[in-house]
Length: 136
Image (cartoon, rainbow, N blue to C red; front, top):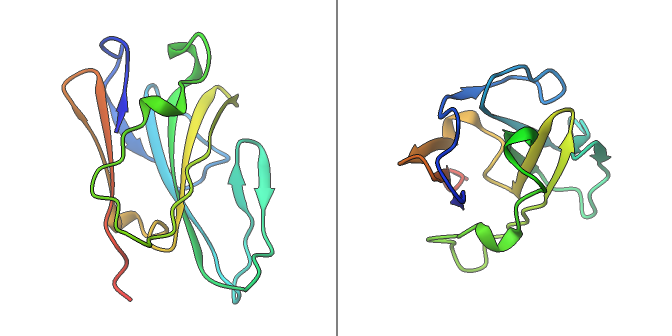
């Protein structure tokens, strides 16, 4: 959950297929995947990440928020994790602006399937991102 200081100007949320071609008026989200069989780089904050060792599947869910909503990228202490499973590998870089957006990237094995991601507002100040655990 990301808690904003006040109501967001636009609470629309859109799924986009390509993190490099985002053109939405408010919140966007997408997913990326790196596998040993298909080593497509993960794009995070203008950088590419690849070559994981040991070679395992890495998923990334990305939430992109308009940079002009912030005077500076939000503090990571504004992100609240609930029901984070013990031992579940999770990394969450927060950065920006990049191409007009602040990016929250959630790296975990389960976060590459769009059907396992839910992004919604609880009121006008709390953005909720749910990542369902993988099925394997």
